[in-house]
Amino acid sequence: GDSPYDECFDMTSNNTILYDGTVSVTESGRECQHWTSQVPNIHTRTPENYPESLLGFHNFCRDPDNSGYLWCYTNEEGVRWEKCDVPSCRQMVNSHNWEMEDAEIRSAVICQDTIGRVECDSDKRVIVLELLRA
Image 1 (cartoon, rainbow, N blue to C red):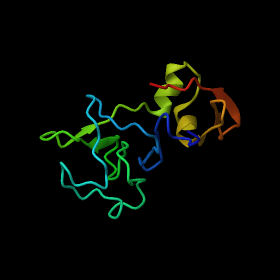
Image 2 (cartoon, rainbow, N blue to C red):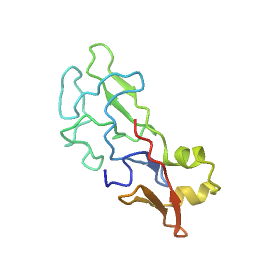
Image 3 (spheres, rainbow, N blue to C red):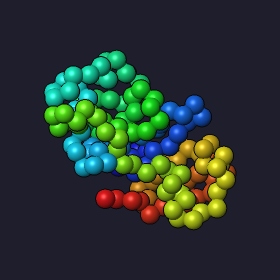
Image 4 (cartoon, rainbow, N blue to C red):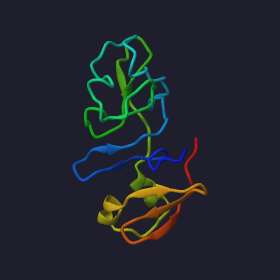
């Protein structure tokens, strides 16, 4: 996609997760329940109650209540919610062995252009990122 945070998530300084990607299964492989649905799990994490959290008519992993990780309710009866397996942008940078200071990564605004380049705005250094596509 053309969003900065669809391949990985980033954290703001107050530990809010930035992610508007489309991963919609939990780390154990269960399908996520739609945030607008109350079946099979009745819940209050709705787009109306959390207007800032990019919830909507979808079942993508999110962190509406600032848990510090991405998660969703599952479509499986008896399994209310599970974490999602989405890499942090910092993990992705580290996995490519780039030399970057933690603070620099934290303050970076990650922007992705059409050929999959990622630019770190703090010093305009361009990092080539092999996008991790499942």
